[in-house]
Image 1 (cartoon, helix red, strand yellow):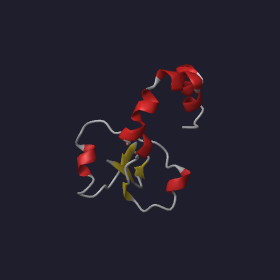
Image 2: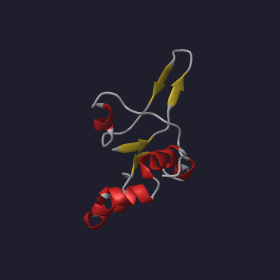
Image 3: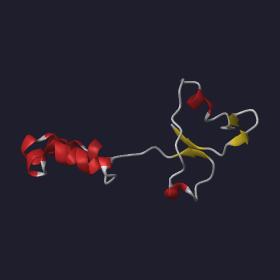
Image 4: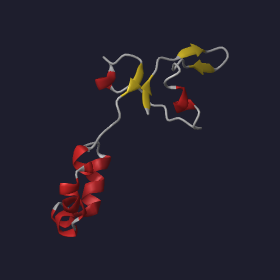
Length: 91
């Protein structure tokens, strides 16, 4: 579950409050929550639940063998090359 929320800030108290609504409260009852700045592409989204991220190709059983094939990984530059590419923010 993901959410885009607008904070209410009480700077003198050092407190930040969120009003997620009842449908998003389970997000905060699981322990810790990751907070990060709003991505630019979310600027037009209303506050509330955000659609889950999906990776259709990664979930497609027809191509799973391709992603796991050692010769495909090798020809694509190997795991180090893939990791470097992902860390640059391309993936």
